[in-house]
Length: 334
Ligand code: UDP
Ligand code: MG
Image (cartoon, rainbow, N blue to C red; front, side, top):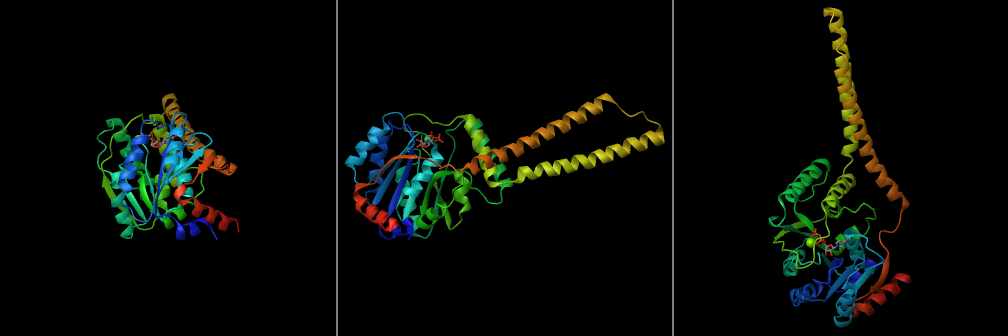
């Protein structure tokens, strides 16, 4: 029997997965607010902190939280693998019938948890949390985000909702579906949309980061956009074919027109500037097409190595459910 099926039958009701990287400044406040928000959730709660190779005081704080709070599971990576990997690991280790993923910097308010659970009880498999305003971000970041959503939604067949990040709730079957996706290129918004099922969207006010600073840089956003587009669309590859065809047709038409003009009117064939413009344009287009090919081939090459997505240094299951988890392991080994 598969572990996930066994877990569903006897596990806690709700798991909360929190990827974190160097968040010592927020962690105590985060945990307090989480506990206050889940105080009235019936059936048990597991809080899965995924330490993505933090180098500050976070591991020590997590150790203390694990010792003092029976609901806390701590998963620690062998190094920093990135937020997407941390979410992937958290989803694999979470045992709840419903699993919530949220950032650890309190930009995703834990106070929304009861509303998300209600939507799940009403039948949703995925509860997407959409931020009401991006007013706190710079004009440039807002425009970049808007252009990105416009581009990806035009290029991919599957709609990716705008302004919905990693703050979501998943039912057990949605988590099991996500756990089957082993690709290395983990564009989470795309994977979350790809699974389908009944999705509902709730709005929330995205707060300021409670402490510390964002780990995102503008350059990473560019990589993020390329990841998203290459993961969910092959349209850029087809563009090269279409542009190539158009150029070929154009050159035939141009050649014919030169020929006719030379024969009928005795025009001299225009020389140097035309040639330079055409050569540069075609050269540029070819380099662009090769670049696009390169983006896809690079990903194929990484994917073909089939390395694990992350390596785990330690896993401390929540003591409240440790015996259940051990039973699950035994079933799994049998
Ligand atoms: N994070 C992570 N690994 C990383 C970078 C970030 O687990 O390599 C976590 C971080 O601790 C936070 C969440 O991902 O809980 C969002 O990160 P951040 O606030 O830096 O991003 P932003 O909110 O600016 O998009
Ligand atoms: Mg943040």
